[in-house]
Image (cartoon, rainbow, N blue to C red):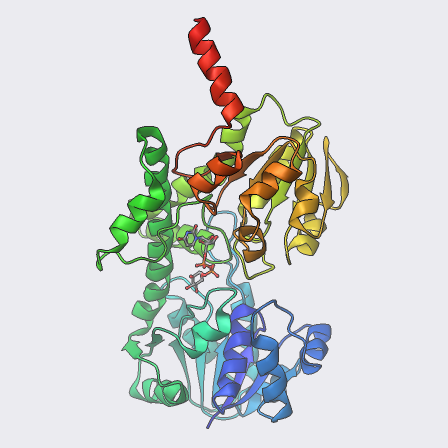
Length: 456
Ligand code: UDX
């Protein structure tokens, strides 16, 4: 078993640290935020992630896991130091590497024994070569230190499972010593390990994430065409999924991908290509489609209604996907301001994301409109003129079609996640607009159309 330090306790760092402790390593997680460290010591997770707190408490009690702000103590005699700090997007699409640089310098000035520095954060191809040079430049003691790349593929909401049962571990090293050490650290996980050079490992991370983003944008593009030609995107996806070369996952059309990875990593790879004089056209297309897709529902609703001014608008789901309280790049963040600008009175429901959303849009008057946070779907729907579904939370999927008819003033629903069957909404008498599927009109609307036809 090894002595491991982990720099950064966000999604990547904390989950990695906890899982390393769970398989028996001695782990210290380092963060600069004293309050956060105290919170974690008391067994509370700073992030919302299924199963994480249980493992934090269990391994802390067993003495295999600790948290500190004292990086010197944690790094000094570690066998390996994993870096999981953020690499946020900069205005030009490039990755901000300043957090990595700070950690790396601290490592160089502190380590007292041979040590492998493992970069888990997503960094542009070639960064780890520079990290290694940077460490050598600032190294204080006469010790051997190398850098390895070990990208992370966890998805929010299933991070612990994704780590303990990962489809593959990617390790990118430049020496036998580094490769063998990292292999030994991962041995107890008993998972497939792919060992490549550092630059390939860095590229595998971007290429994987961007491929999934591309897959989603492709389905959204096809969904938009389905609407125009009278096909149904869910039937189309199902038909495609039987081909093993295509697979059945990530074929769900909707209002675009959000989160901390896809938007950032697509732009970062496009930027990297540009820097090398290459235009990455597929990824540029994925980004463009996604940008348009996020406001697709709003555009549809704007065509259907003359104005949102003074309307009661129910918003169901605020987070970028279910199972997380994360709002980064969530479609709600694009749509809510458009509705508020138009003077809508929004009643928003999200099982866990409302507090974070209220930090951006506090309850009450916001510009021309207002926003009120409610703690159940019915309260949001009560007497509403229109409803938007932005996130497919289980709590929202469980709402029966009849509830919209019963609670709303006008049963008019714009669903960005295709959670209802068309037939069910027809039967319930709800006007229902979704993505890449037939629009469901209410009987009264059909009748008035027939009358128009007869009159003309
Ligand atoms: C993603 C990758 O899955 C993970 O491997 C990587 O390490 C980080 O980025 P995450 O951002 O947590 O994980 O969520 P994910 O479940 O992949 O969803 C990302 C976005 O794509 C969400 O907004 C989701 O709603 C959207 N999505 C996903 C679709 O629109 N359609 C789909 O079929 C799948």
